[in-house]
Image (cartoon, rainbow, N blue to C red; front, side, top):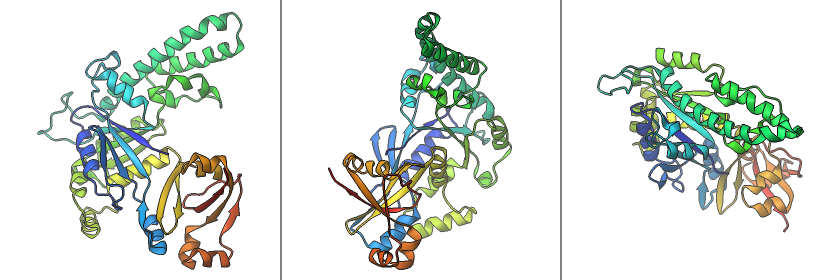
Length: 365
């Protein structure tokens, strides 16, 4: 399954610097270097040290990591909800993404002018929130107009939908994002067709100066306080530092550079991990002489669904799955040794795939 994150932010917050750092990042496996689909869309491999472990065990012809798309969504200014700037294109692009990566300026630099004249991450966040909320209100109002008439004549489903829509409307009018509204299971169906913008999960990327990349700063704390009820992820990065990290092609040199700043990993890696956590994603693997490959699925998916990301025939004709744990594979070195030790399990349609499972599927169509 493809994963697409849209990068948003006001002018001069470091959004383009971050996107350019992503575009220059050298993938650990050469099969999926960053590539540009459109001028503002790029694909990058998801770093996963488990692929290296499997590759060392299997010695495949190729290694294919799973990938993520990053979309640099341009054109947001105050008034975007009314079509100002490239507002309509911006809002259309953001409807298509799985998650929003909201880059917020948390650094002071007299050489980089702030559009509002001062650094205020909470105010910056609220500008974008307001534009998205206004567009969502427009969508909600249109649907309310459609369901009011059948609701008045006694249509039970329409009455229920109208009640839910009015709750969302009041929530948005209070300046709150739709994802923060507590609703009963199933109530989200009332808005499912609207593709509300503020329902989408958000990762806030706080762009700080290099000195604050480990601990953050007062601006980061201000933002964290403002979003504490949003169930959002916060990642601290220095976009300028990420641009330097992306230039390294040698893993050892890159590791040494990170160590100089006290970092265990790049901001890109932290961003990808935060995306997986936010979207409730996990990875399973297939491993053979031709290729070792990572596959992204939702946590809680059963074996047939997981097989379906390889090919729909795998799900349609699913018979069984052979499952090994990576730790067992590491210990016994080969698949045949794992089988002899009873470490290869045969699982049926109800098996819930675990993160890191190594799987072979049997199917018949």
